Image (cartoon, rainbow, N blue to C red):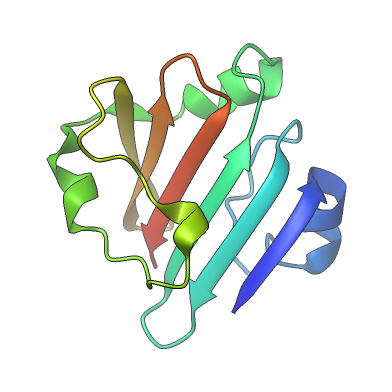
Length: 122
């Protein structure tokens, strides 16, 4: 399943947060949100843009911890999710981890960019 939402309000209306595919504390300032999830594997991939200095994103980021970037190379996004590709060899990557509902999740940011990638296997 794949969806696209220009704003947080549209994402919220979709019910994806309520159904647990998108984190409850997802930043309200997020835009250009693309989400895909696999009902069989319970994996979710989200790409969004955000002003990294916005208070809600700073709050969201404060709940994550910096982790080793090795984990991002093992994420297997379906090939049709061309928009989720993370430049794993990029030296400017910042990788964060946390547990959402008991599952390890990753947040990948590229320094000096507004693009963020979220991955979780529920």
